[in-house]
Length: 278
View (tube, helix red, strand yellow):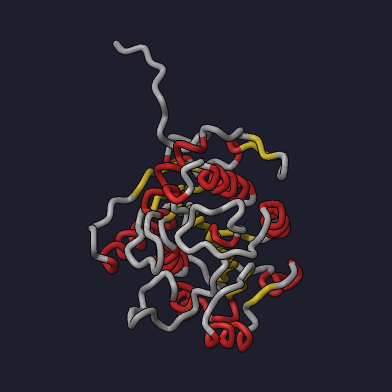
């Protein structure tokens, strides 16, 4: 008999038993519609490995991961080159998670993977709202004629939850018509109190890592200078901890563009801290 010990490729501090978990971490390695630099499909695997460089304890929230009670289900496998089938696979698996009375924590991959999660969660929760951290509006009606794109994911999500139920934080890039959309529907947040209108709703939190400044997050597909510092993002998380978060994802790390590994380490810590408020 082998004696080990053996390296674990799952997220550290996860509950290995799906049936007794409250949250299911789901790897979503898809980047088939990226408009600039591909590579976010490699993020879930690299994030899992990097997680072992973190402590289980968060001083920000005075909480340990073991009390989050999440299960790492691994990465879904997708048919290469078939965006619609990929989205179907995500939606079906997320529906299974909620049918089992659990919540999802998705790790992308590109931002389009949020859409099928919202489609699934909306079947189980009324009064659903989205808190969207990003550098980009993601509100295009289409990108080069394609409605299913990471550049239009929030526009598609708004068709499910209603634009009045989307709040966007950190946005600093987009087409004129997208900024007009944000102004018309008052989606853009400048201060934490702008989220008060969502209190009492069921919240899905989606974090595109390019919301962080390129100085700390160069490893992303569409870097955009002028972004948040890490502590600023944490201040928003602190405000959200008293909201009813029913699902979340973290997307758009493209690890190979930062050979130092620092971007992957930052992404991993963002995930740990977001888990703490669920």
